[in-house]
Length: 343
Image 1: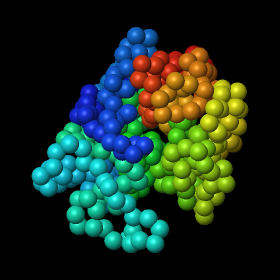
Image 2: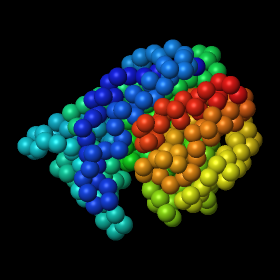
Image 3: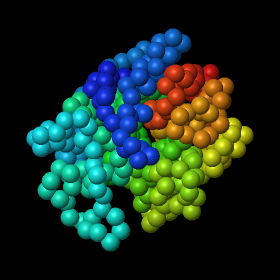
């Protein structure tokens, strides 16, 4: 299996986030991608390629253009205020407030375009975001050109980013952009299978009213876990998208037996949809030792995930999402890929 990776992700480093009432070093750090890359080479999964440059025209079909225009300006405007460190929002629009009015000041705009305090910006953040986007589309091109599967080693991740907001370490929704790219290049239907511990709220929000992209999320119950305000089982799509959004919320402490039962049901529903290609939002924070998650999957479970996805018999793009047990992230992420290759 070919992997696409960009070293430019290192520009997004040294940033902080707001969590549990404190400003702390971000859990989403450069070493995440490097551990995965090291493991890829250790098992000789296949060639590692650098991404080709892509414009944002496909991204603009799933993201609001004004939001995409805002992202590259953030840090320079932050610095123009005489500030250093990480650019973070401190206020957000909520129910009853004027969420239709874009403030002029950078602080107001950061809140307007953010869901939480986890998407900090430093000097190299935009370049890393753009390179992650390019990684996803280059890997999609490999699959479209005939590869059975490809791996987009994206950093930053993407599945929490919605059409006009950043969230949960995510800025551009790489999996969603790739799905749109496949549609633009001949696919009639695409399934996004999100196996990250956290619900892919941004992906759901983007495609909730569409029937050409099926979105399947296996995740922690939002009654207990981030992102809290989306991901319930009764969210099935609306309008033309009715029935094409599937959520499998699971309680803290979920183990392989319960989690794999949800995966099996999701795969059956995916098969019924009969997509031309599958985009897997590959988060491995379901791991029992993940520092910010509360599921109980073990190292030996991750190859089983890949093997089950392989049995779908469909062209597959894997897009890296979460996973914060840094020492084991390479073993677990690549375990899914080797399980797929052997499946």
